[in-house]
Image (tube, rainbow, N blue to C red; front, side, top):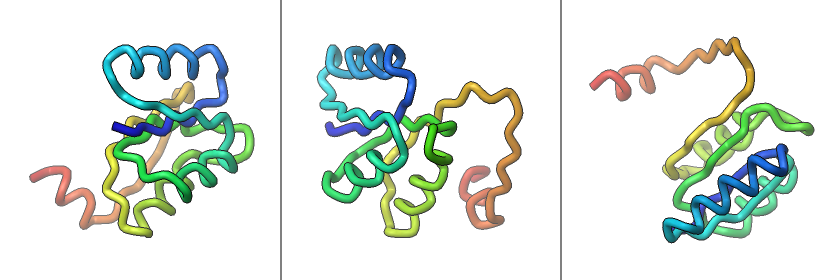
Length: 98
């Protein structure tokens, strides 16, 4: 399974990728939003490990673009931020509850 790891902290990214390889996944790493966009446009990923706070933008922008294109890949979002306020559309909230 191809997984895109988007993480700007080099040591954390290396550990995540190593752990994924140990259990049989095939991770690619991008340390910035621009690199992640390039990889996502050229490779089909089944899942993404996504840092939300990147040096060149918000990881959610990558996820929004993927969803607009119809991607249903699984996402594990990572952040060091202590406060987040994410407002989901009513249709999304309804699917999460059921």
